[in-house]
Amino acid sequence: MEKDTLIMSFESSCDETSVAIIKNGKEILSNIIATQIKSHQRFGGVVPEVASRHHVEEVTHCINLALDEAKVGYSDLDAVAVTYGPGLVGSLLIGIMAAKTVAFAHNLPLIKVNHLAGHIYSANFVTDLQYPFMSLLVSGGHTEIVLVTAPGVFHTLGDTRDDAVGEAYDKIGRILGINYPAGKKVDQMAAKGKDTFNFPRAMVQEDNLDFSFSGLKSAFINRVHHADQIHEQLNKDDLAASFQGAVLDILSNKTFRALKQHPVKQLIVGGGVSANQGLRKRLAEEIEKRHMDMELVFPPLRLCGDNAAMIGAMAQIQYDKGDFAKLDLNADPSLDFDME
Image (cartoon, rainbow, N blue to C red; front, top):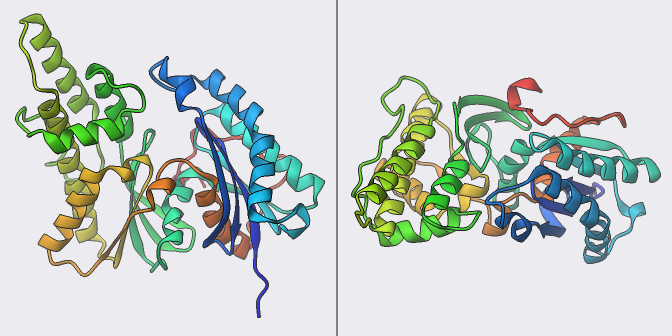
């Protein structure tokens, strides 16, 4: 019988300090998340210096809570994993220093994990992954279509050329008077409204799998500003529904075009926007309408945002390959799959 593998994982790429203990890459023994949302709300977005300071304050407490909740000690661990990019450089460095300290002090191998790969492998807590599979990554910083051909082997098929989809939600949320982060509230409003404004669906006719949301964001802001100038009252639920309708059309169009080019048995959706109920409903409807023999996998809502459990899931893949980092590991804030 093979020995179980226990990995302590760290995630601090943005405004969540998270430490988890993961067993065999598939079982969460603990997943502590200290969020900073309230600290950043008054600024309307994440302030990097504030985020870094919070990570320093929280990381030791999160380590202790993770060990206590998992009922394990350092001697039970087999490795330490940490997000090294992409993300805010100051925030990444706090997690990296904490992980390196634990690894050095307890003579444990260190594993560097791509944050985006973590979002994809959050599906490991839901189902057995079947290679090759497709992933739609949708978050505040990233919108990508990725083909995963083998464990830990990623091929970017499409990327955003400007704003990521989550970033666009936050920007139009500000115009609607919604506190950061705006995605959940816009999704709720969209469910009550109608798509009446016919906002642009950028690049859906182009022969590629890339995304663009800056034009949609600008069209939304210009429409609201014009209404303000002529004292026209606009229905906010309809505005939200029209924005989300355009987003879902763009995401759906590109995703199913990618699936036609690369037929697979699983579509994995990851990242903060994977919590969006409109997106979940739309993708499920499209698969049913097209009579596709394919499993649609979303992470549990608690694992859609940034968390250390997903980093531990990806770290298990690298642990099995013997893919370890050196203790001079540094942050790579602009990391993407093609750079690894």
